[in-house]
Length: 207
Image (tube, rainbow, N blue to C red; front, top):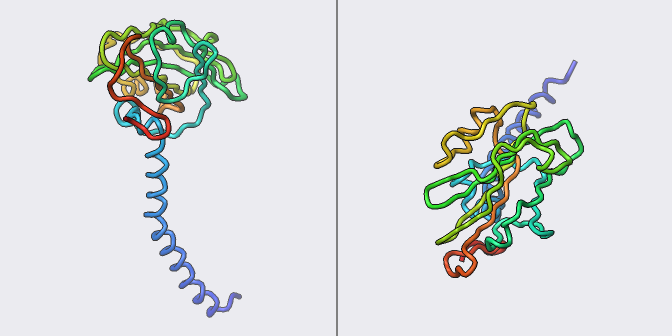
């Protein structure tokens, strides 16, 4: 039988551990805020404007003309005229993904690419293309294009959006039970001789 005095002695320790946990919460929150503040998707206002906050759990790679895309890249229309190679890294070909490419301009969100049933370890050409790739053709201002990746629970039929203007990724994911995004990337594009405006730098953010 346990010594009652030893059981009593444990109580202050448990209380101290609980207090320690509570005291650490502000520190953990501060660390998370610092990490998020350095995330290009947050700095570029993709998370918050186009997407809800999410935890990245897939590896998405976008390659234009043999150059890998990094978040916040500034690209001209000629550099993105051809459809990129979009790879999903992993180990299980049975895991399927849905890929969206959206144009974010002013208050509009328009899908420029929709591919479903992409097996993990492959690229978008192995999927089912619902909306064909459209190359960016900005005439004025800076256009932001966002690639969004969702993990599917099973192979399913997904239809092209009936209304492309003001497309909602949240509503789209809800209709097809896709859950939150698992990866995202974005770049900015303006006309070939365009200059000025707000430019994004991967390290310091918007200028």
